[in-house]
Each structure stands twice: as C-alpha cells, then as structure tokens.
Length: 484
Image (cartoon, rainbow, N blue to C red; front, side, top):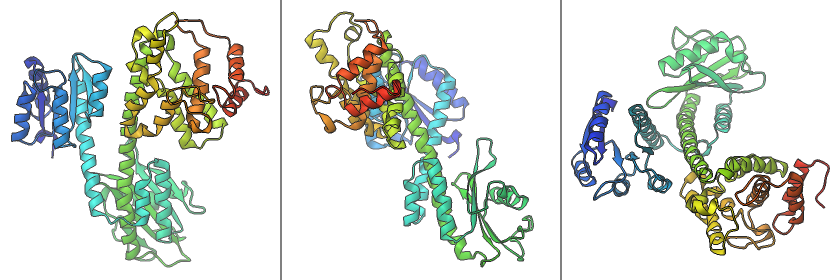
C-alpha cells in the first residue's frame, strides 16, 4: 500500500494539536482521522482500518495508556506513537513496556513526527515481508541455522560457506548493496578467490546485470550465455552461478559461485538449491538488519534512562559510562568470550537504572543516610532488574543488575547470596562500581585517592569482593603489584 493510502488516527483532547497534525500529515499524502478522546478513537477503530495511531497519553475518560492497552490486545502489530505535555520517566517506561512504537514530548517538531511515521511504516512493511517469505520458503536444517544467526558478519560467512558446500563450488563471493546503492564485496571464500579476483570485468558486469534484471544467471563455459549482455567467463572457470538476493521490495545483493575447469559445470538442480538458500538468506539478512535497528533503538532508549538517573544527581555524572569501561577491561582480562563481554558492558551502563525510583532527596543527601533511607537505596537493584526484564534484548542482563551489590561473603543485598552463587558478571561489576564510586566526589565526601581505593579493594578481597576479580583489576591498574 502506498503512503497516500495509509490511514492515520490522531487522538488528542486539544483540538489545535489534532488540527495541526492532521493538516501536516495530509500534506504528506496520508488519510487522517482526528479524535478528541479515547472513546471517540475506539469508535473510529471499530468502523474502519487504521494503520497507525498518534495519541496523547493524558486525556479525560479513556486515557492514551488505556487506548494503547486496548490496541495491543486487539491488534498487536498496529503501531502507536504516544505524546505528552507532562513527560515523566515512569510514563515513558510504562508506554514502551506496553508496546508503544515510540514516545514523544510536547512541543514537538512536525518534521520529527513525519520521520517517525515513515519509520513506523517502513518497519511494518519489512516485518510483513519477512513473515510472508517465512511462510513461502521451506525450512531446511541449513536455512534454519541461517535464520538463527543474529550477527551480520557471522551470517554472511555462514551463508557463503553453506552455498559453496551445497553446490560444490570452488569459490564464491557475496556482494551486498551498500548505503550508496552500489554492490560491494562483503565476503569471499575459496582458495585463491580473493576480493581482487571478483573485481575482474566478467564478474562485475554479470553481478550488475543480475541485480538490475533481478533474475539469476547460470553461465557455462563454451555455451551460449542466457543473455547476450553477459560477458564470457574467464578461461579457468567452467561455470558461474550469479543469483540475486531479493526481498519482495528490492534487491539487497548478489551471490556468485564458480566451478573451475577440472570439474563438471553447475546444473539446474544446483540453481534450485541456491534458490532455496538465497531466498532464506535474503530474509535472514533483512531480519538481522531489523534486529540490529531494534536493538540499537532499545539501547538508545535505555541509555537515555540511565543518563536521566545520573541527571538526578550531579555527583554521579558519567558514573555509569566509567563503570562500563572498567567492566569491559576487566572482562577481557578475565578471559570472557566476546558475547559475554558485551553483556557485562551493557550491565555496567545500566546497573543503576533502578535509581529512577529513588527520591532525589535521598540520592543528593549530603549527610549520613538514615536506616529507612538506606533501605530505599537498597531497592534499586531489584527495581532496575524489573525495568529491564521486559525488554527482550536486555533480559540476559537481569542477573548482573540484580546482584551487583551482593558481597562475596554473603553480607550484601538484595538476596545475600555468596561466592560462586553470585553471577560472575555481577562480581566484575561490583569491583568496577565500587572503585569508580570511591574515586569520585559524592555529596557526603570528597573522592578518595587512587591508593586509598586500592587498599580498600585489597582489604575487602574475599569479603565484599571476589578475590580473582580484585587481583585482575589491580593487575590492570597496578601492573606487577599483587593484592596478596
């Protein structure tokens, strides 16, 4: 469906906002219906298809949050953009957790609204295309593994490797359309088949032709090419399969596979095999891109929340970023694999996100906290764990955020677990967090010297902190000096 046929429902109890948004979106070619209340919005939804909703959060009667809940119960795929003139972190978190596509505060720029609407429709279209392709393509074991891969480089390597092995090719190249709309060599395979080899004129010309025509080509040595525009093969090659990688809307790349002269040329059966692989790989590549975009958006949102926590306390500005840096260095020194280092990295950034729920008066108190105030502070690991537990990309961080104030001897909080019962990532985070806090100014004290902080880590080795982590940290910060 073209943009001009999309139906947008604008819901706001302020008529002027409805009118301005409606006129702006109509100029962009959308069909727009305006509703002045949640009740009126529900009537519109019951009468005609709506493709996107822009709704104020605070309205008399049925609020924007109530409307969002109703929409997600009846049509989970319908995107809802929430707006409010009274922004709070609690309302933002609630809206996102309930499934809002995005969250905006008033006053907003109309251009910003327009861009968010376009992105929402682009995301929907891509999701619909991926679902359609998934139903049409047979899922074999190889293609299942492709679709389960979420890292771009790993996916490219696997796809090309599987393709070579499935059709017994001697060499191959995967070309993907870059941000400039040009084919670029992304991955190569096969002995002597370097990127430079694939820049030879026959392969460049064939790849461009296949991408433009959106049709595959099987070129066999000494045989008439399937199209007169295709150049002859290099003398060492007996056959070339050049296959476009397509989604329903566009070509995203080209797969080239060759056999050398000492082998039999490829057949139509090989083309069928590549067809299945290429079709599934196209979905996988687009899914990985979508996954990466969604993950980045989640992380940007959560990073903003983390920064908002620090904004409540001028003394902790930059604390989470610094803790994140320490955790990464520590995790590498302790030999964690790359995927676990990434988890520890983001746990370092988000470990204090639960302080969103702690009073600024307590966070900024210059004197000693009362018992009751300290009990409030101690709630932040559990609150932080609850906040991120509903975000799919962040669920794996929950144990580290929840347990980063546990003590190695079992005297910490919130669950008083000890030793190896504490997740290793949380033990790393505990040392990094404590050191950064000790060497920074706080409302109740000036920063401690580095030497004093080191001595405290040594003194608390085996008590508050894991000895292995303390030793690794001191080895990084004081090469050659042992904590023992």
